[in-house]
Image (cartoon, rainbow, N blue to C red):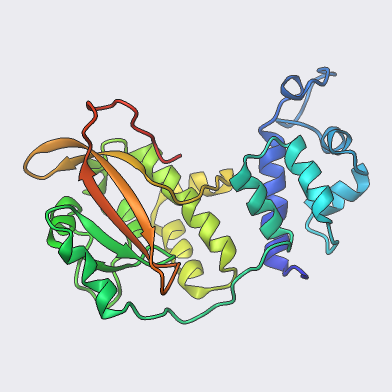
Length: 273
């Protein structure tokens, strides 16, 4: 599969960000002289991956060259990428299917009714770009101002970054927001060119200084279940566990359900980073 210019640009940014976060000591290389830039030099990374320094430079510069999966796996190992970052690297380099821009599939009436059946547990269904397609009243109370009744769907990412009340509800706002942004970036790469994602990312950049600061760090993350400390409007901070289920008809649509954790507050709680 050939890659588009915006994919090559993202690949360049991703490789550079991961190269710059490694130090020679971390990969067993000697420290030689004073360094003007952070992280490994391109030549050092190429040596670790067993590839030509010139060829790697072209790849990081975003030139139109084709990298084999074997070479990308070698780079992933040299950069110490986790499995989500490795998948993201392969995706950007054209070794995984990138979804074309598409119209949103409508939520079926049967699926849309599920959150209502889960009362009193907060529950909602989101699309791949975090648009809220269905929710129950418990979710409406736990996440104030998430559902505004405007001319566009509510969006959970937009709420986290642009609604001031979200910083009160999410007790650990910064790590939660960083993790959410990483998951949005991962999903956006799978839907390269889809305006639902590009418009949302542009809006976040315009309105959120945190997004402008964190986006260049190029964190990626997959969706998963976990725990969150949320401030209930009447009961104060509560440790919630949450889990997510992909709908059979539309895997991009996800049912998220929250329930109070039975473990002591703070025990085993994972942060979405």
